[in-house]
Each structure stands twice: as structure tokens, then as C-alpha cells.
Length: 445
Image (cartoon, rainbow, N blue to C red):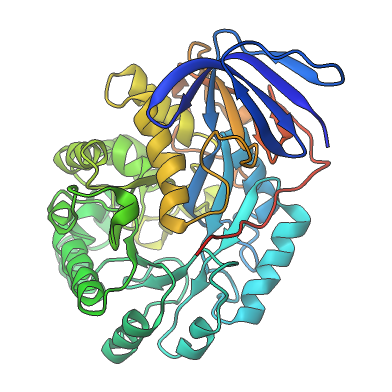
């Protein structure tokens, strides 16, 4: 393995920013020192004026493989993630076939091993009748279990009350949930369709997939988790109302019930549907400016524990269809960090809090082994950024397989310069070194 020294970086880690140097050996952080490090046989990087962050760990992505590879695949999306400073990800089970057996789950791990430039883990999917498979999972090798308590891409809705009770009471792994009340959404859509017919558009999406539908499902999940002392993690919170379900009086690592916010719910609001249309159509829906601002406040006051992407690509053709026919979801991994850094420039969030919510806390909540922090002996998953190198998102620099981004045309003030994955310089100023793949994440449980 290559040996690197990164000198004179401003290191953002564990609540502080300090100028220091790092020595990387055998894929690990061998030394962190205040002064410059000089050693023969090492590639020395002068990071004067640059910021060094632990690589982001994205706890929710949809890379579409197997079965939906016209939208994206593990190879293409992991590359885009690394270019965006994401060094590890947890991928969702709503592929084709759905990952609802250990055998199907392991098939995805084989693809990751062969093709993923970033580190990886894969959620096991739930159905109304696969409890026995869930109970066979090795908690040291799998990030968690995913329940779709609201339907989205794929046919994985778990809506049988008995099945839900059994899963919440018997599964000991972290359970991550997509929470929207399906009957309420269907009722809303029927009502809107009767009123507006084919003139329905993305501007109606947040009213159809409403605040009430989100709260009803999220509150039900919290009720089940409290009843059974389940380790519950609710994904992509999209409403201010749901925030009352979460606690901010204890450290995230001590909570049994935690929550995630996503980039699109922190950046966009319903006013943006006019210009962006289906390209910001997500489930749960992007809602009002009040909801967006409340979610950010909850990130800052620790009611929400993690920031992720819910990266979920679809083709340009699919997204260009009429509202009711266009799928929900969009690509985000390449632009998540720079979007958060833009929010830093806008004085909305500190660098320390960005690192806490995208690296430290993710590692803590999922009990990931030796990742998420810049510490001696930890895997050298690192991202070097320049906070003052403006660039514009254009089709020519979009790396997603689908070839588009909801941020197209945006100018970001910050740029990812280099990304290390397990000490390997996987991305360097627009160039990739794919000679070494990422690793399957392991967990300390």
C-alpha cells in the first residue's frame, strides 16, 4: 500500500479545527501530529490552506444494482460518491430482486467487493413474511434492517400489523424506516386527481405526500420502538411536526430512537417545484420553507442525529414524464458535501457540526469499526477540501450514471480536492485511481 504524509492541513475532527499533519501507512492513520512530518519513502502532500475531514459515511443510498442498472449501478455511483468526499455508504434493499434473503443480500456484497471504489454495507430488506431470514443476520457484518412503512420505488411495503410487531419485538439489529402512511397518501392522490385531473404537477407532491401522512407513520414507528425497546432509526425526516418525536437531551450514541435529515430537505422547499419540477420529486416530499428551516434547527440542536443523501437516481427520460408517471428520487452523492459547505458559507452550520452529522455520529449509531473519526489506528478515510475554489455543476462534470443533478447550474464555493479510501488516494483533482476497491464495513456490536 502507498504511504502518504499530509502536512499543514486544517483538520476538522471531534468538535475542533486544528492545524496538524497526518501519516498514512498500511491503509490506516498511523500518526497525527501538530508539527510537519518528514519521512523518506512517503508521498508528501502540502495541504496548506486546505481542510481535512473524515470521509463522509452516507447511511442511505440507492445504487440500483441489481436489476435497475439503467438508472445507476454500484460502480458508477460509488465513484461519484468518492468524488464528493463520501468514503463509505449503506445501500438500500429495494433493487430487483429485493434483498430480502441472506443469499440475495450476499449477492450484493459480491458486486460491492468487485466494483465499489468506496467502502460499503447493505441493508437487509423486510417483507411481511421474512422474519426468519432477519433473525439469521450476523450483526457484525450487516449495517441494519430496512422497513418501508410507506411505499416508494420497488414493491417492499410492510403493512401487516402482526409482521411489524414481530419485527420490532424480535430483531435486535438497528431498524431503519421509511415512514409515510400509504392509505392516507392514496386517499390524498385520489382527491387531488378528482379535482385537478391530468393537470396535477410536482407542485402538488408535498400536499399529496403530506405532513399528516409522515407524522402518522413516524409516530407509529416510535410507538412500536418504545413498546419493544427497539433500536429505531427514522430516515429522511421531512416535516417540522415529526421533530416532536425525537429527543435532544442525551448524546446521539445513547439514544434508542434516532433520526436522519437529507440534503434535499435541508436545501429545497415547495417554492422550488416551479423551477425544478419532477427533478426534486422525492419520497417523502420536499415540503415548506418552514419545514426546511425547522429540520436544520433540529440538526443543530441534536434532535436529528445524521445527515445523509437518500441518493436515488432515475433516468432523465423517466424524470421528464408527467408528474404521476415520473418516479421519485434523485442523485446527490457527488454534491452533498459541497452543498453542506455552501450552507457553512451562508453561516447556517459549522464545519464541526457537518463532520459530526456526516461522519462521527453515523459511525457511533451504526457502531462501525474504526471509521468516522481522524484517529490513530483508524482506517484512513479522508477528504481534503478547498473552501475557496468556486465551480459550477454542469453536465460535463456530473458523474452519475443518469447524467443529471438537481444542482445543475449551481455554483459552489468549495471543492473536493482529494479523497482517500482506506489510505488509497482514490480521487485526486478530477482523476480516479481504481486499482484498489473499497472494503466491506464491519461493526462492533
